[in-house]
Image (tube, rainbow, N blue to C red; front, top):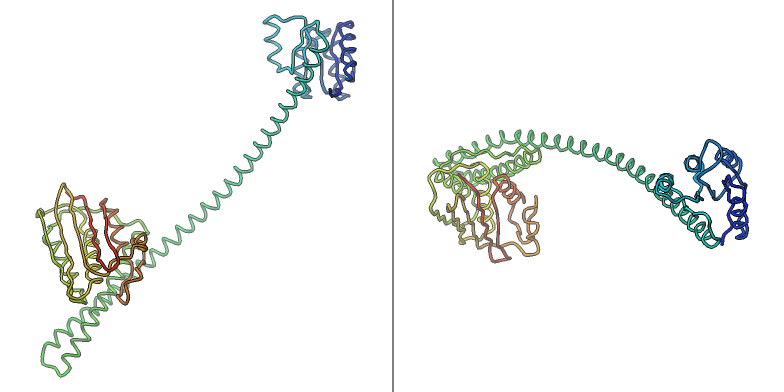
Length: 391
């Protein structure tokens, strides 16, 4: 049993003396005996006590309950009530002061010891809990401040990144547009050279050959710039879905003419058009990007003499396109990166390309709210299937 310094507050001197003896028998130190709440507060103002044994009815203006409220507020010392009353009204008043324990007179020493031990244990646990709560609140405050500061820094960084991205997009768009005009002039000049070479000229063959090279190079540069412009708009969130009526036959012809004009090998495109309506409503520019890139890739990565099958059909308000080739295919280990920007499979060899085509296709399909799937394996060709909702 641990020794405590106890203040007894009891206006009955006989009861106070009996309580003192009982406590001293258990090796507790009696700080003093006060017969009123006022006297008890005077003693506590000058001396430390580990516990107060408090009678409810006291002499003076302050009763035990009011005195306990003051002790709780100022000193935080555990208080054990002593009372001969156990009626409901008294107990309700006592409970409101959160006492450490309540002892009914007359008491026995064993019961008193047990109550004191429980009161001290309860007080210590409450103070430990309060300490933990205070530490937790302090940590929460510190963490809140840290999160606030981190959020400010993150906001600044995101704003800076947004500004940089906007600047990058403006530069990309301006530079790309700047290249477009001279490239168009070069392409026109190359085509004129080929027309002039059709007349009798000693260097007709060479002129035709070099004019064709110029035209092919310009078309490649133009396609690259178109891709860069596309992603410049994509990064600036300027790609919008703009549906309008379009003639399906004319659209398919335009795509095929463009792909065939850019072929640099002897690969044939076989078209299969099934149940197509004359007119549909969709974004023709986005759809053009999808089919032109898929067909160009099919042709580019096929060998001379092979065929690319282009099937286009209409079903359940969807335009369904299938592009199948017999070319080099895509290795299984690299297919997870298929739609990444600038990704090119390791087996492409010397075939030129920017690695942007399929990224453009995927972005366009997202804007069109369509679906794209594929099947491929190395040396066994590739099949892409797209489903695009149309009206």
